[in-house]
Image (cartoon, rainbow, N blue to C red; front, top):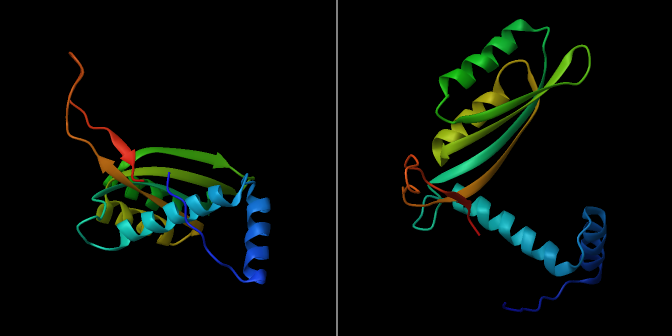
Length: 156
């Protein structure tokens, strides 16, 4: 493990300590590691470069009024149009009118981003949020008589 030292002005250090306490981190190092992982992960997804991720997994969540039948149909149609990316979806009833839907996508970064952005941009969808995680894609292999498959690991 490598160590490094940083200097923060008093106000920034206090804000960081408040952030650490609010998020439940055990110490500053854990918080800094998570922040670095998050920023590096975003960078690998945003920039087409040698170290960029080719694949990712995404959690897409959004709220909509299920009485607006056209939005329900648009959401379903889009998911079916991208059946190759949709791993699973969870539909949760919030109240009599509103539903929260969470969809997990996996595939090439550009395709996943496009699908996720389309889902949250659909007319009638509210409170949309997309969380992308870059993936290392292992070589295709099989274990004994099992079907050939790949292992997808989050990038460090």
